[in-house]
Image (cartoon, rainbow, N blue to C red; front, side, top):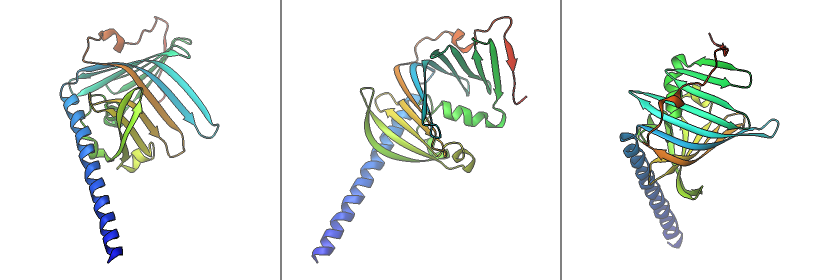
Length: 227
């Protein structure tokens, strides 16, 4: 009888914890939905940590990132200030990478993967929380402190085998009060990952359209590896 009571108590505890996690997850997704409904643009400072497992090396880059919604499309611009000046722009299905040091733009046409690119960009910035379940299995990982914010941790496991071949899991740390991401981590099957921390986040403030244009010269060389 005692063992039965202990087992029942444990089962009730697990059920209660599961219900609590489901409620917390729903609350975070609702806050993201609300933020997405009113989203027009965002600006933030960022630090990228690109880790390569084979050589145990971290490549850090920092700068300012911009997002905006243009109709049904999402545009992103990253002004990388360190360690060297670079620009990244995603607009109309094209990723452009400008290196002023060699005055060259490398363009990649997202083509059939345009929707994937946009969905990655919208993770935590303008994307609806409940839309995540269309492409990912979503689990709630509790609250963690990130840059002074008590952030809700969401672990996304891609449903598509093609996406899983790129990213085994994607982890978002969401500010529940604003429904936006303060940190993201993309884990690759190889053990490599990219960790991004966001700070000084401004939502729906006035952003100049010039930040979504590459500041090239009259002599800039354009390279298109995939045609």
